[in-house]
Amino acid sequence: MNDLYICYTYYHLLITTVKALENNKRIDILVSNELPDKERIIGKLETQSFIDKLCLIDETPYLDEYNKKNRIISQLTKRSILESVFHKMTNMDVLIYENIYTYNDMNLASSFLIINNKKYHLIEDALDFFSYFDDYYHVKPTSYSIFGFQHFIKKILRLGTNPWGQNKYCIDIEVNDMGKIKIPKNRVIEVSRKELFDNLSKINKRLVYTLFAENTTIPSLNCKKTMILFTQPLFADRFVPSMDDQLFVFESIIKKYIKDGFFVTIKPHPRDLADYSKLIQVYNCNYIEKNIPSEILNFDENVSFDEIVSITSTSINFVERVKKRTFMGKVYIDRCLREKSRKNDR
Image (cartoon, rainbow, N blue to C red):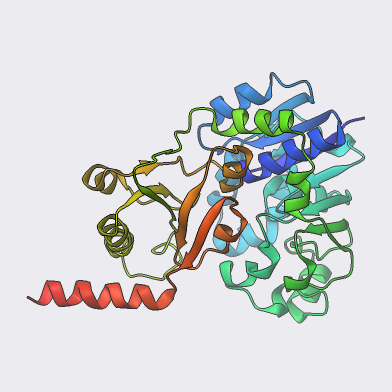
């Protein structure tokens, strides 16, 4: 039987595709119905010989039942709710698979595995995810450590599913760099993302690029220096008070580089909900669709930049063929907000 991969993001699909190509294995995939522009990428994947079966999972039936009850009752009964409606969420029988890989065992498909005592393999949700996931989800070690009181109570009362690989059904946890992780290191295996990508043949690299970024326009201007800006969801992550402040911060960066003679490309973070269309028009910027994994930039040898810039996102370290990497830092946000405040006071 084929291995099953549960994918909720483009990054999940990218890693799944690379693994299937590298191992020359046919696989099945369960894809979230909430994946942006899913028809385009699913249409492409369904034509590939390494995929046998591709099904969708729609979490709406679960959410409808969960929201009918008050919060306490919903929390106490969410396992039974998921059991009762899972057949409405997808037509794939996930329990028949021997080898199942998921990237986030908090999603409902993975939770269904756990409540049915089904073993699975966990792959980190994003590059070096387990080095920052506690900050991202605002959780303390007691919430995820197998020795934590909260973990123990949930296990005894069968509340929730103890995610992040901290339950007896998780076989192993694959990470890019074991040295950075904050979870317990038992069952953790290290698989370098760089080595994973480097091992692909040129033909397969081109195939991956075509699948995920076929219509992406990358600047190749000999007359100007080029800079690519990786945005972050500053407002959503509470680094700034408003979306307007977020746009002000990134506009300040763009203006600085435009003034220094750079041609700017904007690559938004997948979770970034800001509308950059006005900045693109005013400053004549190029734009790379936010759901395209940034790693894809490495799959085209013609893509290069003089500088890559972000506030704090470590994903810029993974992009190859750049001459300079610049972290503006959180201090830059504070400086921009003070500048904006002074302008408003005038």
